[in-house]
Amino acid sequence: MESWQKILQNSLTEPTAIAARFGIDPAPLLTVAERYPMRINPYYLGLIQTMGDPIWKQAVPDEQELQDQVCHVDPLNEENQSPIPNLVHRYPDRVLFMISSTCAMYCRFCTRKRKVGCANMAINAESIDAGIDYIREHREIRDVILSGGDPLLRSDASLDNILSRLRAIPHLEIIRIGSRIPVVLPQRITPSLVRVLKRYHPLYINTHFNHPDEITPQSAKACARLANAGIPLGNQTVLMRGVNDNPLVMRRLMQRLLMIRVRPYYIYQADQVQGTDHFRTSVEEGLEIMRALRGYTSGMAVPTYVIDAPGGGGKIPLLPDYLQQLGSDVVLKNYLGDVYHYTNAEPAKPAEQLEWQQVVGS
Ligand SMILES: *Cc1c(COP(=O)(O)O)cnc(C)c1O
Ligand code: SF4
Image 1 (tube, rainbow, N blue to C red):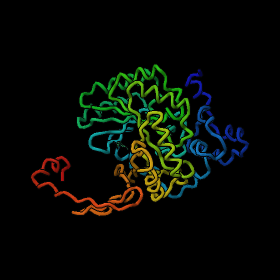
Image 2: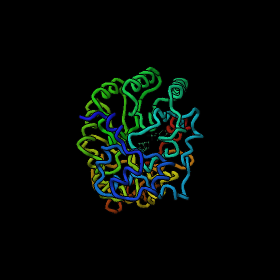
Image 3: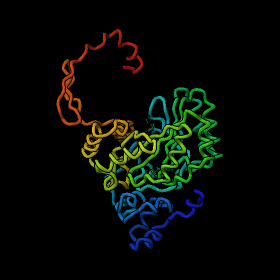
């Protein structure tokens, strides 16, 4: 089998190469790729069936990236919620820690398009040391999400080093890795990588499949190796125009994820990231997709639909209006739209609520 390094080396990084292959004019794409890097490795390239299909749209630069007048460079305010570069501390008990600036494919819709794959994303031994120090010094952090870029593009030895230093921090309960490698370069999930990862349980991996055509024998094998090592796998999907903005496509994706032992975790409403406006759908369309999942297929196949609040407010769940009315008579609507009544219980006495109110600080 070809090594993952070799596959990566043979990536197309210039629009001229993709234009020549598909017989299109490269000129409009050259300026796009100067601003936002392009990398399409031969494996992911091979998933494209026709020009403009959902795989193509995720990988090939598009003129519309430069015509976006609506969105912002850093809509989630990550830079201002970073106590040190490349670590975002937004929530009380967990942090997002970026340990890689590169990816096996540069997704056109990337939320960190402003810096991923660019020289201004300075990740090096010092920034990684600083991140580990920060987590060690903040005892409230019980969960770290390794992100980037793609953490699994680091070498086995480097990941071993980072994970072992994190595991040595007593208050850190769980380690999560966010990676699109199982989707875009599944050959990277080698037995030796898995041997490293399985030493640092409880370790979770959240991957990022957006379309059923991304589930291939190779990606299934990569996920099987991870699952066999006891690593629970989740998936985050971004809802995108022309890629998966269709209830039947989304349902098939969620069902096929379960077949490769990946549990759907989130569907994200597209962030307002500069250069990605052409991918955004309305929230109504997202709710329609959620309505088409719940009840119609396994509950295991139904993720949470969220908007990452602009300005850095965190993820906010969105649900079709199943709950019609609260109070003594709770009025509910099921997945078919039929109305049901539930006679409510009395709320707990204030004394009984006290402990939880102290926890949430209200
Ligand atoms: C998404 C995210 C997390 C993790 O959120 P969960 O809901 O716990 O998965 C943590 N920090 C930041 C900055 C995030 O964007
Ligand atoms: S793999 Fe993730 S970080 Fe990298 S370009 Fe794609 S979405 Fe962005």
